[in-house]
Image (tube, rainbow, N blue to C red):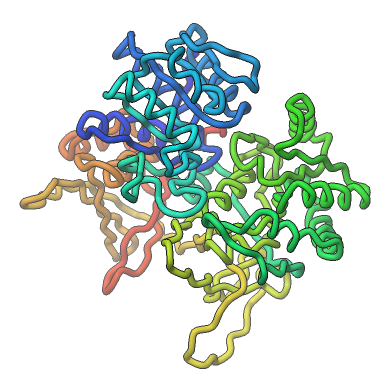
Length: 532
């Protein structure tokens, strides 16, 4: 079976092989939730075995649903793949398959049976703890004793740890470099992910006495603070008020008891609801999730066990009832609502927990720096529809309300919430002409200069097919989105020789850059969108 890769998926695979060809370290691929990490992995595996037929590959992760999903993606692409599963949760104990999909809980103690491995791929790599004396640490150490030349590649939607710090930084890092990034904003812009909308909530949690440990709130103390009957009733009032016209709700709660209490309160209002926790038996968990995906259950509550390995495209409302200091947990939870589905215009995030206020827009999250505080985002709540908008906005993008501006004292004010996406609607300029030119950079790498005629003004943009990393990705993305045949040109002259393959650019958006303007984005004359 042949599956057509989206442009960014092809770029991610090329970036990985380019890195392996030039550097000895462990690369990391950062792809937003819902953009097809499983297909990228499956295609990479097939390409590796096409080139090195005797290679042994292990794909490790921590959730049974994800193991099964990754396995099915590969066998759907390659039905005769020499693949097997090692997972107690799935009832399979294969240790000898050439391509082995393994649950880390089962595999870490069976390295002697697994034997030699050439490439270890880790799905949801942000869950690898920094300490060596963990299941992942012991597993990797044992594999390296058998094969010191073991290559490791990670895939994640959040390139930072659950506590703090980037995965490619620090003395204890396992990964050396993020070789490719395709974020939530990229996916929404390109039409592959659902837009997100956030609302400021009336109900608030008092976290003043909640202790912190390991980069997040202490679980027991957090649940005690949040799981209050009066607060739960008020929160459910708001969930139902916003959710009546939405079909599929997820509530991320602050503990097992809290998840049950939220479920019970929703049921008491006449809406179907179930709960999934780490204590839910596997058969019941599968039944609940299948019913939820099929629309037989309106609301699914959980104690943050469904932040990874859970794929329900119909989710169009997320209730954030679990405060967290972990940027990774925030991004992963919100990612449950970014998949596309028929009839789904967007996903509404009800931010009771202050996720956006704590971490900023989900498409611009940064790892927290140890020992340093983080300011809160400059935002405000629309008084008409309660959408969270940037403080400088003059008109609410959701309801059209015009804000009144008052003179303020010249001191720093603190906002109490933030918009969930950093992007504002740009100004688009029609393009009347476009030219590609060879840009010779003395002492550097040459590039393609693109001149866009917008009326009497010419705006310039540079793309660099001969560079590596982000610059090369940017060039490849422009080429693919304008309909050029793949693979994209690898050099400037090849680009100029093949420019006739490209559709015309219809519009560009620009933003101030000092005394000039820089091109921020572009739209081809005919935008073709692949169904997600």
